[in-house]
Length: 173
Ligand SMILES: [Ca+2]
Image (cartoon, rainbow, N blue to C red):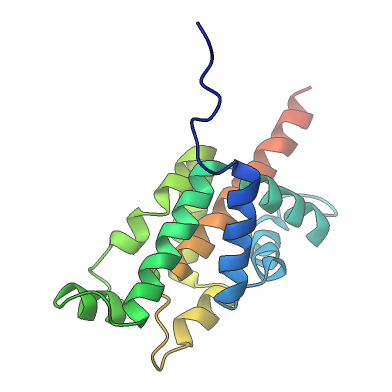
């Protein structure tokens, strides 16, 4: 029996580069996500710094499932921006209706990788719209960020969860 080596067309390292490029193209800097992670965890971790937040974000971005969610969400936003969907779904996506909900379901594939702290943080960010999430929410005029704001919230929540778990492990030892 031989192991099928080329199961994936794109190695995950390459996908991570695509995902980072997509975030940058949509006006999101990784530092801005790190700032949200910091705000979520600063009260729980002594001497937390942005570098540590960034480290955990980079680790989350190395996962294929995470990259898939980022690229899918951003693709939907960009296709909607070009009016390439048909109505009614085009109008629904473009207006980011509160009851649409699919934009919040897609990033659960990121959250699910990091346990229940991730889900709690995701719910919190969805309500509070911290930092760049709020900025994305306010950017209008032919810009569609319906999926992006939830993707960013999920990345921050998942990274915060990963960070929290890494400290718990240290304490358990
Ligand atoms: Ca949204």
